[in-house]
Length: 178
Image 1 (cartoon, rainbow, N blue to C red):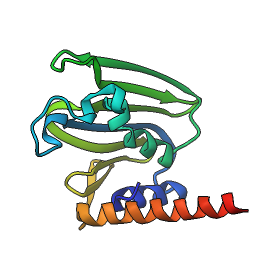
Image 2 (cartoon, helix red, strand yellow):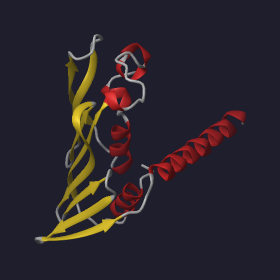
Image 3 (tube, helix red, strand yellow):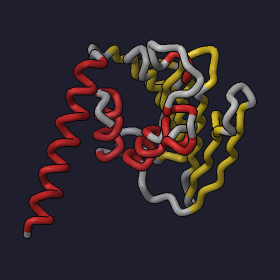
Image 4 (cartoon, one colour):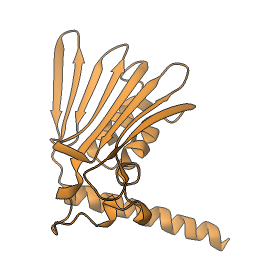
C-alpha cells in the first residue's frame, strides 16, 4: 500500500476515475530460496511453526486488495503444498474473493522460477495494469494505452512503510493510555 502506484490507484478509485470495477487480479510470484543470502531450506519462511508459508509470507497482497476495495463478503481458496521442502508447507495459493458485483483473484507463489508482482483492474471504462516490480502503471482504453513510469526505490518504500507502522503504533499506544 506504500508503493506510489498503489497510492495513485487508490486515489483514482476513490475519485471514480476508472469507472465501475468488476474484477481485480493481484499476482505475487517469487522464489523463497532467493530471499536470504544464506542458502538454507530450514529458515523461518518455509517453516510453518515459525510463521512461514505462502499465506503468511505473502499476505501483503491480501492486505493490498482490502486496501483498494474492502467490501467483499465471500471467499474461497485453494492452497498447494510443495514436496521440495521436508516440512509440509503451503507454497502456492489461489484466493477468490467476491461480493455481489466485484470478483477478485489473488495468486501467490513462493516457489516460482520467475518474479512477478502486479495488479490488474478491469472496469467498464478501461483496464489498468500495474507492474509493481518495474514501476509502470498502464491504462488501456479504446485500443490505446497510456503509461506512467514511477521513480521509486525499495529503500523509499520500506522507509514509508516503517513510518506508517510507527505512526499507527504510536496512535494505538495513545488510545491504550486513555
